[in-house]
Picture (cartoon, helix red, strand yellow):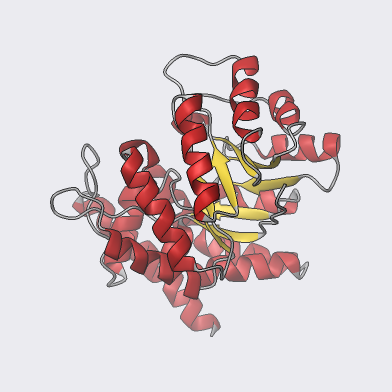
Length: 300
């Protein structure tokens, strides 16, 4: 199996659309490049921020190929390949591997509630047919499936499943699994407001859309963590906390697109039924971004 170590800030690009709600691939490439040059440690297209469930198979493949081409080996690329069915998840996992992805991320998606055995078989079926690492992604708020610590521990018995992204908002799960499985298990935070607590619990990285808007603050937080400077880490985290919470509460695609516009960068359009932030929300976002940028300017 190909070995890939993801650490630090794992940045999630949005998938922008044109006026006709078609994927704007030229703009997508620009947005990916922004993340790379602004210091992201890895790029992860086709997550919640990239509106994965709203895309056709062809669009997912277009996003996958263009991300890998644009990044061009400078940092790792982890592609979201989740789908309702195992067959389609496997299809996209194979495509990502063939295109040159360093890893894939899978969240169990279902209309019907899945049993633990069904989820295990789903992951194991995909893992047996690819040779790159898999990140198991737990996000009950978006998937409707909450993988228990016992199930996550079981999934890590699958050789290719080497990473766990925890977005339930319960940092105690990460602490429990690290205690059960040891310090070498790779856990990643997917809940923006818990970034500091997750790093303190031993997370190897932070999977986040925030680098689209405040890359310097995100990077400074991680640097403080790896330098074991807790006071500095707390300072950087709480300076961005309100913005981190806002972008989650209002919806990542909506808020990141609007935030890019605040920064003078075209963020493209959304795909229906998603709608832009209202005026009040947009003005609040502008204020929060300005406050974060004021902090950066003051520090530099």
